[in-house]
Structures are given as structure tokens and as C-alpha cells.
Length: 269
Image (cartoon, rainbow, N blue to C red):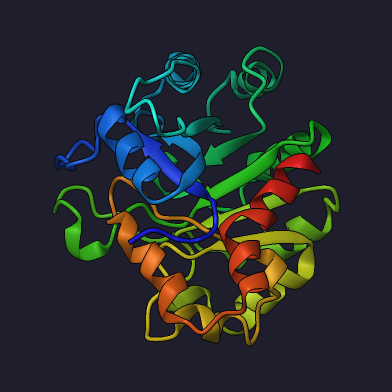
């Protein structure tokens, strides 16, 4: 199953989740899977960033992994892994680490896991982080959750991020570019999603979108230019997100926008 359009996957993680193995948690295997489905670029965070406190070393390893090539079949094009550095605004050196992500590693954006790092979105440091990221023109990718609650280890049960404090913070930072990852569950649909999208430059991806005709239904209240392709790989099956594009009756223009064009435009802003 391969799409006609090249794909930019905005929701990939490198490394291993601590409570279980995935068939694709080795980078070579993950790249081979992405290549087989026409992915040309993957925005990558690090599973280590969710749990480790030394985020400088986490981001060093992530940048090195994304920069190193992988030799696969000669007739295939290598997937470009784009690193998104982990930032925790509760750590004492987070401002310096944000600067390193931008100036040393030349990362286009950062990844946030508020629920795993222990802060709510009404924490003053989170507002400061959003302002700092917007001033540096960094894309902020925020994961609402990392795995289905049915898969969570009994001692690692983490609730989804409460996104309700976000709209006013977004409105205060008109230059902020925010991508919500794993955020299209029932708690983020309807009026809250409308408020988030109306507050500023907010994008969603489809990894956790459920239901028959999910993308088609999403388009009834989300502009197509705000929808990105994401798979939450390697935790989720890549084909799940791909099938969501194929089972909805989308126009070629909409399919191209979601698969590739929207992410490329966001990255080049």
C-alpha cells in the first residue's frame, strides 16, 4: 500500500519505548518502512526525551541520529529525518537548551510532553516557553498523549494533556506555529478544537483520528491547510494513518495538501 503522493510524516519518534518493544524501534527498520510507503521526510522526536532529565545529551543523540545516513537499497531514496528537540520548561537550563536546539543543531522546532514532564498548560513557565519559541521562529509540536490508555503499563498511566488553557496563550503569540500531536481524540473535538484553530497558527495531524471517513469528517470543520500527516511511528502501525487518507473520498488537491504540501509550507515559513 503506497500513496501516489510523497509524504512528510510529522509525528515520528526514534529510540525505544521503555515498557515494550516495537518491530520498528530500530532506525534502519523504521526508515525502510517509511521508504516503502513513499515518505520523503519525517519530523523526529526522541523517546528518551520523554523520560530522561539530561535533555542536552538526548538532543545531541537525536541530532546525530538524524544526520547520519542509512544505506538501503540503491534504487530507493533515503528518508530525511528532521530532529525536533525535547524541551522541559521545568528544568533549570531549558532556555539554554532551546538556544542549542536552534543555534547548534539548527532544528526547525521542538517537541513537548507536558503530561510526562509534570506541568499543566497554565504553568507560567509554559507561557514563557511558547513566547521564546515564537521569537526564535521554532515550530512547537506538543503531544497530547503518547499511547492508547489500553496499552499503558499499570505503573505508567498518564492522562492526556488538558488543552483548554491553550487558546489564550496562542492568541498572545501570533507568530507561534503549533502542531498538536496525538490530539484528535474525543476530548479535543468540537468546540475546543474550534477555539484552538481560531486562536492562531494551529495544526493537527491524523495519527489518533478514529472512525470511518475520519479525514472526510474532519474536513467539515478543520481547514484542509491545517491538517498534516502523522503516524505516531513506531508505536502505531504506519499503515493505519495511510489507510485514513485512502478510505476517505478526498480530492487530489486535498490529498496532496495533507500528505506533503502543508508540512512543507509550515517548515518554510
